[in-house]
Image (cartoon, rainbow, N blue to C red; front, side, top):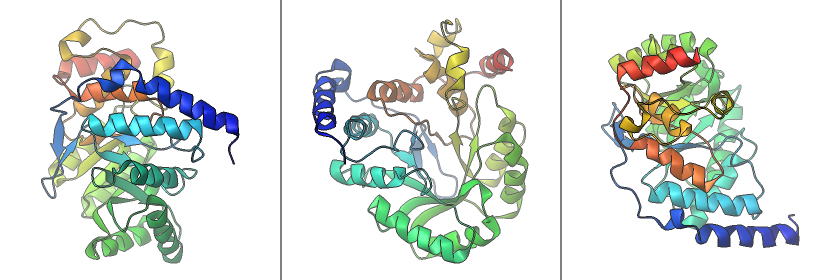
Length: 302
């Protein structure tokens, strides 16, 4: 249970946030979208993750702040939220927030199977639906290729049953990308999720072009390298050309780098702070980076 002081802090947080002018600014229009190749469904290029940021206690001050984050997220035109049953209860917090905010219809829910047997996957799936407070999801992914030969057929069964609209696989390290590519070549997939950033651009060599060729949508994780990129640019000015692309922060630049590859459907940075959520959404507007600008960033962060 959370203490009375946490309840008071939550109320104060909401009061301060509600008074903030940035929260009441006109909702942006025209967030860039990309189509899912297998269906043509358009998804906003800026999404959200839940690892770490949604691992909070229900009703706490942090939980109340996440309500404001999601309000900014959905009012800003975003939809895609990625979670997992092994993110420390983040999926349960997400489900409760979506229900309380009335956002289930707006949200494109992407979750995962992270299990080592069919029986474990079935039990986990039942728990995921309960946690997310829904009877179906939009995308079901095999987490980090874990037992994928068993779990991918199971995910396809759930798709046939109407429990998920799309299936896919995920990984978060460069070392997993060769195997991801092998699976993309051999298995019909709707989505993959991989890491791609200014300091880890390897996916652009083979995997992203392969997804374009095979008609597979791509979610991007670790666009900030788990926050390490911000330490590298502390007190550094943005490149002189950043303003030309409508970029006002390093977070926007790192996200815009990811979505500037035409194979990328949506990038899913996690945050628990409303002002950062609004800042990240801005990466989905304005011109994309040119090849020269992308290469300059890769060289800078090599």
